[in-house]
Length: 104
Image (cartoon, rainbow, N blue to C red; front, side, top):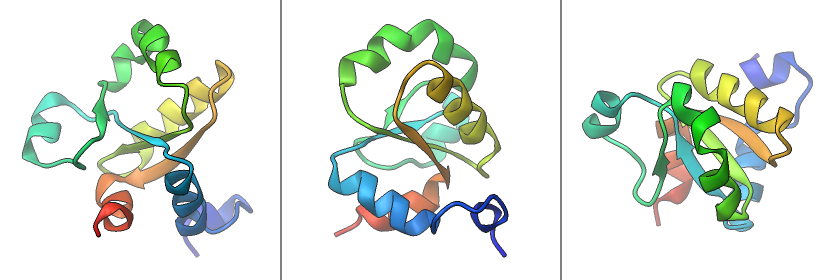
């Protein structure tokens, strides 16, 4: 059973696809070094600990958000924080997990 199944959420893949159909912004919260090693084309990059300082920028996107990182932990923290601040956001988990849905 995957992490999403443990919490009774619907299948993460379906949720990611739904958000992408709605033109969601992919928010990568990894470090700059991790980002430079590879990332999803078109994703926004804000390091996790800087998210509280960038709320106005994030609000300006006016779109749902898919948070990603290396393994899902930091994107989970970002998802929780952004949800508490009124954003529509899901935890996409590892960035490669979401990347496979963005490739044509």
